[in-house]
Length: 333
Image (tube, rainbow, N blue to C red):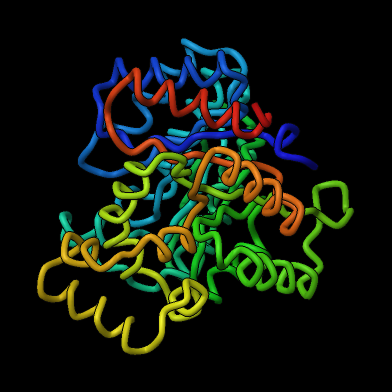
């Protein structure tokens, strides 16, 4: 698969107003994007309210939530996604995350037993989407005669993972894996695929089920975008396991310096230590031609099925331009 054939998607962190968010999804559909997922950031716009509105305003683009098992009970998540699926005519999907500092800390929530809770969440979603009454006991969750009123749903479950054990869980239990660090793609996909093969994960028809491979990137093709990226990675770098930090090219002293900066001044202090080289290890960056070359390489080297661009700030004109530029870069224009 080449860059002009890969499915394109976008993730929106809902920092903008609801009208602008819906307009952005509509613009992406017009430009040929296959997927849109909205981050469930807890105290920002409600992800399911805006996805429901987007379902009525669009007709082809897949609509997903990026959510976690801590801020919402998975049964409530199952019902919300089933509603989006019903409203959109079967276009819903979900990307599960274990919950990051930026989302959990303001609510006073602890990221406890993430592996057990993630496995339970995947099981609970699939059981509930059968449309039948469910009484079930997991390691952390339980259901007692729970049944959705919307019937049966076939909603793909992707997992965004970083740590080795979460990657293994994604490889074994999920339909797709979303990764976010360019220099770590080979190791991360390798861990997930090895676990999938060892488990003999099967599709519903009994055949070996391929793992959907997606990569999420901000894409920096102008100098000011590279500068902007330096100030975005405070939380991301601090939430990353040692494997990712080493794949970014950081040594022990540099890692210790970043952790000390975070302890002293938070993500803003970390941003001041991020170099152009570190940005280029974390994401696709350079001239448009260089970005095109990097994307082509990543698709071929890691057999990517979808490339997602991250929309993190308001500005309808700027975001539409970004979406269009990604299309142009992927098409080689």
